[in-house]
Length: 94
Image (tube, rainbow, N blue to C red):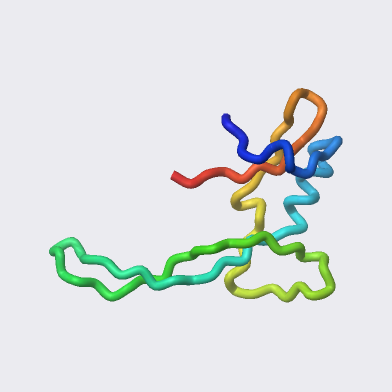
């Protein structure tokens, strides 16, 4: 697996610390309308799709849960690197 920007990532001593960091965050998405064509080739009205996600810390004083928030754990996992540190790694979609 190729890691991007690993040199700037926060490193953790244990898997538990890394997983705790992940579980304290959500991804806050924006919605955008995407237009297209249906199976017959006719113009179809847009559908709402998630876009522009950013990571938000739930334990901050300003945090308020919204309907566009999803747990970071849906997209990230703890990965051991060089048998000594752990990184929170985002999985890439297909």
